[in-house]
Length: 268
Image (spheres, rainbow, N blue to C red):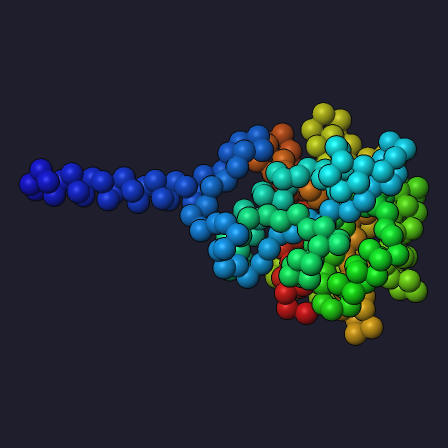
């Protein structure tokens, strides 16, 4: 082979190898996986991973507002969201090259993103106008997944806000045979998914939230519109999935559950 052709072939092979490496690499200890997808605000996307930014009224005795330091809405952000989105791209055919989003309740873009993830919802508070916007969002086909709150006291605080958003609606324990657990993966065995404290303590529970509950709220047509992960911490399971000390059985279930929720929200 002539030197020029040899150099060209070597360059092409190196480019291909680097492309595959960029697609496949996953860092250790919470590192980032790099994927060969176009990204940016103008990239077309079938799905947007959108986190709800809300007012916090219970944390440390005062409201942090939308941008406040350590507001309840931003726990595990952005690593958990990013790593979940990486696995969505790897394990499904949903085309989602877009970057992660943070969506304010009072923003006009709220209705552009029909799937929302919210954490620490025991701290959330709503004005009447905000509650009405969230209700409108859900009634127009939106889907809300809530995560990472524990014990009876935090449940009551979560319900203070949820009752403003959906007054008169019933929270139910979702049965194992519900379609939401079989729309992509068949999930028959669900268990408590712990936060990072499991690595040092071996405890699956936080703040005396001993019993996990997979709950939901349906609209008048029977569609699940709010998926409730209570006494669990799926966000940590996504974030710590690449840490050898965090068991795969927890992160594996956490990813299967959220991918089912996403698929369900896009098909129902």
